[in-house]
Image (tube, rainbow, N blue to C red; front, side, top):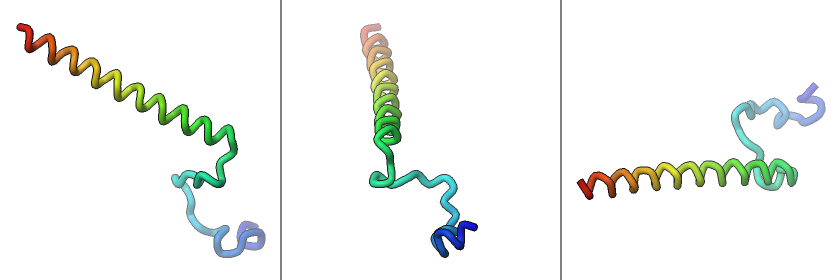
Length: 60
């Protein structure tokens, strides 16, 4: 079925590969951006907690 519709390209194993930017819908693009922002926020929260702990240890 896929071969008839897409040729050899239709048989490629694309599992685990995301869509390229030009293939994303607006919703997909926004969801990807939200995920990236959440990851950045989490990284900053962890960094902030580490710096607070370091500051606390230096005071003692």
